[in-house]
Length: 145
Ligand SMILES: [Zn+2]
Ligand SMILES: [Zn+2]
Image (cartoon, rainbow, N blue to C red):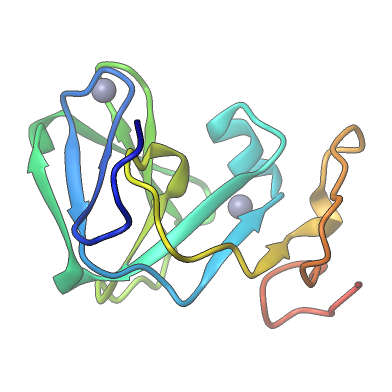
């Protein structure tokens, strides 16, 4: 049974120890095909939603959040206990927006992804079969479809 699409929307990691709530999601919600997202999630691509920091809060298990800072300065946080990927921050992150892995949501949400990014790094076995815009790199890069 999925919950009704009324905020706050709730999310959690695989083991359930880390839980968060988010009051408002978007407007940006992108499927990212970059090799780092693919490796971190062990998946063909990942999908991040964003929320203003004041609309996102950890409600349990924040002490289990572990950070991994990659060579390019990006910081990804995950559950130390179960490995679930939870947040992403760019190297120049202002802290005003939280990017979180949409796959960890337990609630249904009313919004949908709007874009595919880093399609230039897409796994060759992964097929995009929707009509969303596709960008070579980030949203400011060349649109390829
Ligand atoms: Zn966990
Ligand atoms: Zn990525």
